[in-house]
Image 1 (tube, rainbow, N blue to C red):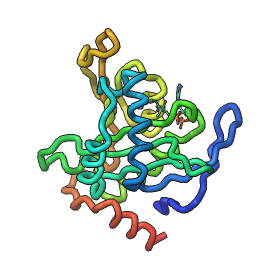
Image 2 (cartoon, protein in one colour):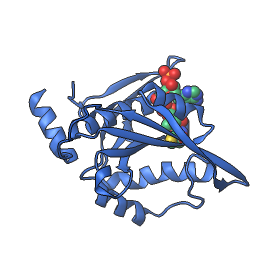
Image 3 (cartoon, rainbow, N blue to C red):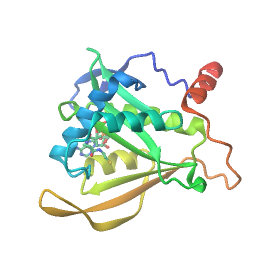
Length: 207
Ligand SMILES: CC(C)(COP(=O)(O)OP(=O)(O)OC[C@H]1O[C@@H](n2cnc3c(N)ncnc32)[C@H](O)[C@@H]1OP(=O)(O)O)[C@@H](O)C(=O)NCCC(=O)NCCS
């Protein structure tokens, strides 16, 4: 059921029993510095992200402002109010026939890995995207990245292909694989995508 429960706290239990408390909610402009810090950590320390220099807040603000109406940006906020992870969707390509396809991604602060934040974020993100009417989700993963591959496959994504040696970072070439999840296999014409807030309002009025 899509109740999104943005107001409730979730208890996350990891394999070694640590329990974290989190709340998943839509990101606001005030969350962008924390979101960018999480992404920039991955830029500087991993090949999961192909930026090679830290990205700028004004560019992320522009991206958030232009996409947030139709693509959800979610944050996971711990008991102390700190943003520890985010997940978002973005357009896969600009041409209109792609309107029902979204690209998704998720990042969690390294000191909070394996506490269930990414699972909680993706669970909500995918619920919202379904409610909006998206049909197909895609994720590009620099391989190897067993954490991200397992996470995506646990949400029904399967590998559909990949490119070899498409990124040069940290002195070596990197491959990128693509994973796809079909949210709705109905062969008929899709309804217009609902804006994020409208899908949330409709869901909360029926739950
Ligand atoms: C991938 C990432 C988002 C996972 O976040 P997380 O909060 O640690 O993940 P969760 O604790 O919610 O784990 C959910 C599932 O992901 C998989 N997973 C997470 N970390 C894993 C690891 N180190 N090894 C194998 N599987 C892992 C497991 O299937 C796990 O479920 P389980 O605990 O029941 O086995 C995190 O490692 C990260 O931010 N990495 C850097 C950025 C990145 O690679 N993002 C993905 C871009 S495509």
